[in-house]
Amino acid sequence: MTTTVATHGIYQSVLNFALNVQQRLATTTVQESSGLVSTQAAGLGTSSARLLNLQGELSSAERWSANASLAGDRVQVMYSAVGNMVDLASSLKSAIAAAMSGTDTGTTADTLRTAAQDALDDLADQMNVQLGGRYLFSGSDTDIAPVDLTDYPSTTPPSATTADTGYYQGDDQLAAISVSAETRITYGVAGSAGAFETVLRAAALAASASSSDPVDSDALSSAYDLVTTAISKLSALQEGLSNTAGRLTEAKASQDSFSDYLKTMVSDIKNVDAAETMTRVTELQTQLEASYSAVSAILKLRLTDYL
Image (tube, rainbow, N blue to C red; front, side, top):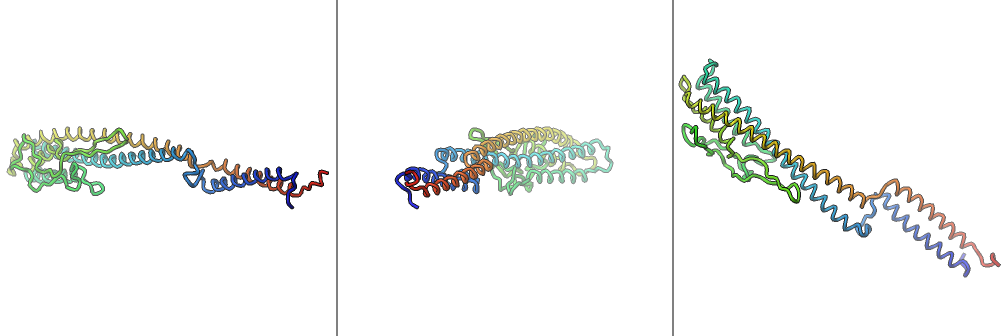
């Protein structure tokens, strides 16, 4: 039934209200099903620009966290390798001491030379450690093994006093990585470092000692002093790597914490409260039903009812 002159204004008002409720219900129903305030950026209104800025900051924070994590993994492998070198150097020192003192009757010049050569090879293996196909002690030449003993030592016998880095194939440029907009951390150590040079030369010197009994005491005394110094240097090197690892861990934790904060802010803009949205859907459905009932009632009214 059509409306009358008397009921037209009321009818139009109630109908507009019903249509408005229907539109709000449609929007809220989509929000309930998607969990989002809007599936389009335009639907966020003035919050869309803020959301884009927050997402950009979040992307940067996650990238810096990944940088710190990757560098931290590399430093951890370096730390372990240097620790293994300390153990190898300590064993070599004990073998040299036994040969010098003569307390180990089973230790001859030949067996000591073999032990020292094995130590030299094992030390080189530790320095040639890789992670993800990347040589860690080669400086920036990460695709080149840092240690090549083919022409090492450079002199025969090795010098007890002059450094010899003829084994080294890399460069001295250490890696650096950004962990924030303001902070860039340099990490690692090149294979030409004094600790590495000293321990390799000590092993080479012990391996080149005279093969006749008694063992060349001068050469072994020098090798003993060198390996003692090397152990101290390697320990200091390991401590430095530990400090760097600590900085990287702190940097990652800081970026992870900031990322969590940003994610919460992004969620507050993008996502709806599920329970609240469900309640709103129910309320709007009730309002819409009431509006339709009112429209239906108005349509049944006749002007003669009021005469």
